[in-house]
Length: 121
Image (cartoon, one colour):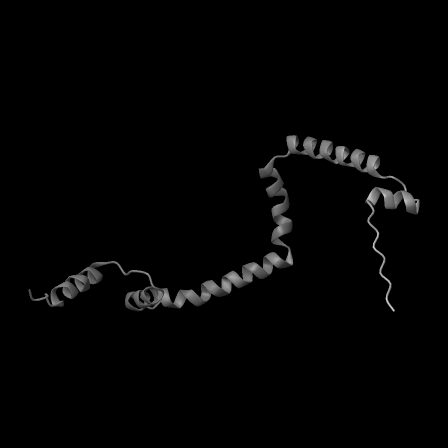
């Protein structure tokens, strides 16, 4: 056997029925207080001094250290491809989908245009 009871009541009516205090006035006072404090703080806030003051604590935080160590590892992996020579570096750039520029690339383009057969009319 199941019995379902559905009660349609507003929050204010339920609070009154349960004997809970009405906190609407307190909430309005609290929100106006917070608005006033935030407005006063926004007028005196200097973003550059805020960043300077908090930068040291950011640098010493564990998430920042992990981010920096991950960045250093990825840079170390990329360095050998750049320092091993121009040809290998161009192959890496070409493999990444970028275009290779320079004298040899221009010569290759010109040679490719010459070697393409012309359609017969």
